[in-house]
Image (tube, rainbow, N blue to C red; front, side, top):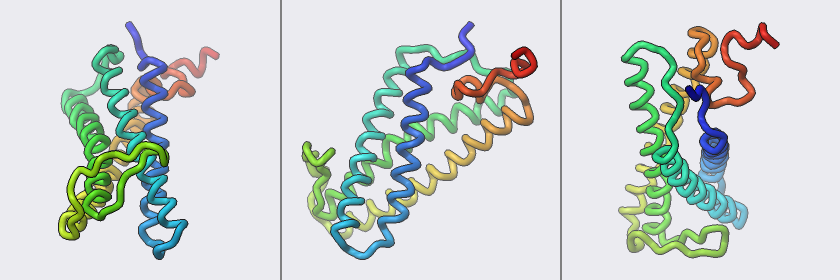
Length: 184
């Protein structure tokens, strides 16, 4: 019985996590800047990262559909349910947040040009009221993502330090399974 996620799933998990952190830091920083060439460049990079996250999440979802995850670690039923809901919410947020950013950009009249090469079609026409709505949605969903990711991380740490089970070991290759430390 497999006890870890595949190397591909682990790579996608951590790559997406790093890109989400990068997009979050960039997003929080750039919104406070005055209009300048630097701010516009950060917005472009932020959009590139968002599109990349969206594509990688699609790839991860396809991978997950075609590759069985390891058996769940033993835990109470409510924790399994909470884990399932949290993971589904993370997938939904990772797919919807970039789209709200794209909608905000389209409604603001600024195209999304992926990697400076491929202009994505506008999803809506320029509209100041819609832009404000999508900007609010983008922000609220991102703060929701921060909370859900925080819960996800706290649960993983709790499983590792308190429950001493294999939950963290399954997704973090550098963490040995419980009981393996004394065998090295």
